[in-house]
Length: 133
Image (cartoon, rainbow, N blue to C red):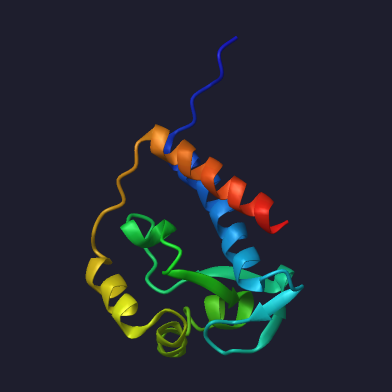
């Protein structure tokens, strides 16, 4: 019996799971937690989200590692809507103001990935996760 094809939305959701976990692992850098990109308070891995500087499910930035960083889940990402002023300040320190300006300049470009490209990205981030675990 052939495998049922996933809808594009479900494929993106699958990619988001592995990508977001990789972001949190990347930022923890082998430690049990890290500082939130916005408030700079330390949180354990389980309390971190993969917080987007510019968030839109249809933006090219959805899976751009420069745009997504470990962020405290309840406080900054949820309650404060991303705490974007502090996020930007600390993102500039992390990747440089030129990179942040580039992110800001492409934020309205649409996300266009074929099913094969989505699959490739899922495998790519699975491999990167294996390297970190």
